[in-house]
Length: 115
Image (cartoon, rainbow, N blue to C red):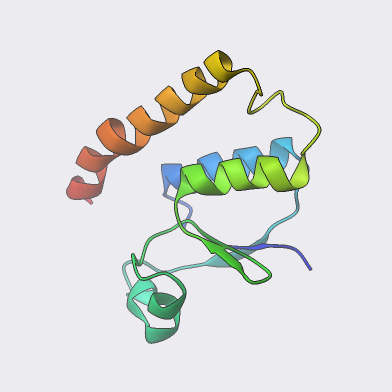
C-alpha cells in the first residue's frame, strides 16, 4: 500500500515532499485537505496530527507531519543505499541540514503568518 500524503496544492512544503518522492520514484496516495474549509481541524485529522498542518505522511503505522522530516524519512526508507540526496559525509549532510533548518526556522514562518 502506498504511503498517504495529506496535502494541499498551494503549500511549498507539500511540493518539496512531492519532488522528493518523485525523485525517489515513490508513489504516494494523495489526500487533498481543504484548509479553508477546516479539514485540518477535524477530530480525525487532529488525532493524526495535533499540529493540524500539511503535509502529513502516513506510512503504515508511521505518521510524520513536518516536510523536512518527511523528506528525510522517504530518503532513508525508500533509497537506503543511495546517498545522493542525503549524503553520509558529515560535512555534506550538515550543509543540507543547514538549508533545511533555515528553510524551516527562518524562511517559512513569515509565510505561515501571512496565510
